[in-house]
Length: 193
Length: 430
Image (cartoon, rainbow over all chains, first blue to last red; front, side, top):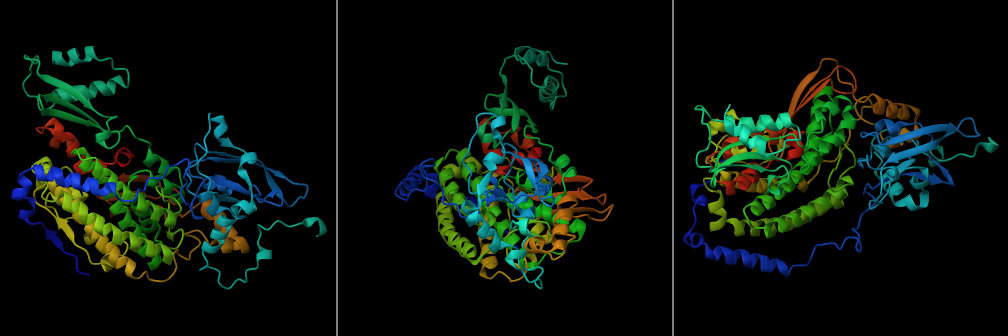
């Protein structure tokens, strides 16, 4: 396509008579400012008013709790993918020898950069980004979130889970017949197996 | 050794990196000195530290200047206050893991940095990226360029004394960030690019949102232009200030809008097209004067050209995939991970080992960022992380010229000079 190099005109650097007078410009600037006073305000009175964030917003990462149990199987992939090394975990086995769960799961919120890589790599959809962004701590130990503060019930995270299901890259594996029941991250009751 | 160096050193207590401080002051004293002068007989010279904590220096830039009255005689620019070792971090992260770090380099245009990094890795590993992904990246790159230039416009006009302009440009930036939020999930540090494509597709709603914003922005931009055109105050602050000749600009490594303001028509978008720029119609503005006003004009015209590019880009987005379909180069889709064993294995392999370019591969890939040529030089040793990553950041190259520009100008012009070359310290210090 045609792309050209355009040189400017010398005349655009020269002031006209009105420009040289200096004072009209001050009034022009004032007129602009006054015009802006009557425009609708865009300021958000933050703690009282909250911005309208959709399900696509990446807030703090949380663990999904389903049937009073975490989905997480402590594979450690999120800890590996985490660029600032914010996640640490300790796995343990449940009574069922085929299942594992994280005994300790910690996210250092001072390190977290909200990139969403943990959510992206998780093979169980167990860690997702919640819409929660305004939280604070008074000391560094307080900033390490354990399972008590990370586990959030699935119902509360439903908008984000729906968003992820919708945005899942559907272009691959078109010939596999997907069934929700086959999904690995649906918790199975193995007692009757 | 002149006595004055000692005299000055006695007055201040150098506790913070004393050797470095010593070297800075001595370099300042020794600059352009061929005749040994014992002392300043009339006591008219004054040494001033401009920065690092000075709002007008756009971050943590420190300029040590020696003034005689209002005239700057010598200057030394000190960078490195925001050094985070980004290049070394890259050697210890996989290619994909390093991508969010590029957001934090030029933090005014994070998307351009993401794209620059992903293009470099894709060139290194030979990844084919779908056309639709390239198209969406181009849209986001131009939005990032407008957003970076908006901040520059606001701060530069503020540096010259008009504070309300800053608020108006920031309102438009805010709208732009809302669009980035809808598109990538985060307003500022987007991390939306992936090696081999992008994370989420651009929906039609967002496309319409960008078109709406663009139409409003055109009106706003016109009104700003009206305010600044033929404005005696603005013109007199800028015309003839900080003139950089064509030869100097090339010798000192100016890039981007600053280089084009000195009369060198170099733009990577035109001469080494990346993404889909070769399919688009746009102009490269060039000015010969090389002063602050020329740099201002170039950036204003670049905003106009970016809008022109967005006009063409948003007309229709080609349909297709948004990520390469190759599990050795990019993450598999989530459906594949959830429902098939191969997908899950690929997910683990990609996270742990990442893209493994061939051993000994070495490339340099650059894009035209808002500040200038942003390049990555990567050397691979066959593993998932680069053996060496050298970042050519435009702000760092542009700052090389600042010392020369400062010397001989007035002290009130320093902020305008710094504003006109538009450095971002996150990128200059890396």
